[in-house]
Image 1 (cartoon, rainbow, N blue to C red):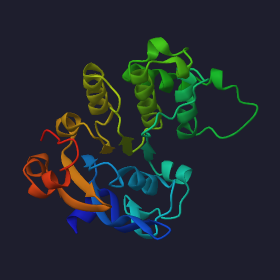
Image 2 (image 1 turned 90 degrees about the vertical axis):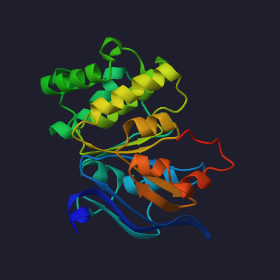
Image 3 (image 1 turned 135 degrees about the horizontal axis):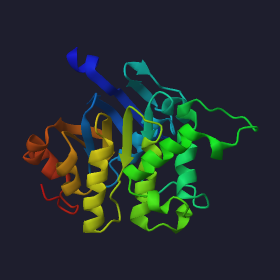
Image 4 (image 1 turned 180 degrees about the horizontal axis):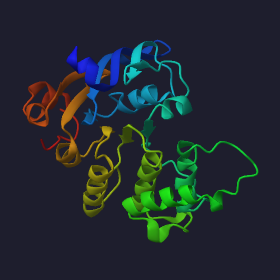
Length: 255
C-alpha cells in the first residue's frame, strides 16, 4: 500500500499486441515520486513501445497506467503531457527550421497559460521569454538561441530535446536513450545535464549505456521479451544472474 501511495507512475498488467504478436506481456512497474528510475534490456525487449504506451502514442491492449493515481488509459498524448508527463524520443524530435529559442518557446506557452490566439505577439511575452532563457541556460544553449535547431551538433540537438521536455516544468520526465550516438565526453556532459534537470522530479529513462544507467539510477528495471524480470537497486541488479543471462548474445554490459 505504501508503494502505491507514493508512486508517480504505475503500470499494472500492461499488454500490447500487434495483431497476434505480443510485444509487451504483462508488465507491472512502479516508479516512486522523485525517483531516478532506469529501464534497461536487450534490443527488441519492448522498451520504446512501453514509452509509447505511457505517453499515449499507442493504446495498451490490456492493463492500467496511472499517473499520481489517475488512470490515463485512452488519453491523448497532449492530455497526458498536461498531467505533468513529458518525454524525449529515441530519434531526435525537434523543429529543425525553428531557432533553438523558438523550439523551447513552443513547449513553454501552454504551461504558462497561453492558448491559441492570433492577436498575441509571442515575442513580447516577457514571462515566456524569461522561462525560455532559464531553460536554455540550464542546458547550456543560451549562446545558440538564434541558431536553427537543424544545424546544431548532434549532442546539442539531444540537449535541446531535453530542454523542450523540461520546459513546461513536468513532474515526470521520460528520456528515451538520451546518450545514444554520443562520444564519451558528450555522454559525460549529458549525464551532468540529466542529473541537474531531474532534481526534484521523477525520471524514467531508457538507456543502453551501463555507465549512464549505474551513474544516475536509484532503481533499475529490466525488460526482456516484453516482461520485467527484475526491478531493484543498482547494486542488486549488478549481481542478478537472470539479468546477466538476459544479455547473453548481446554486447555484454559492464555491470
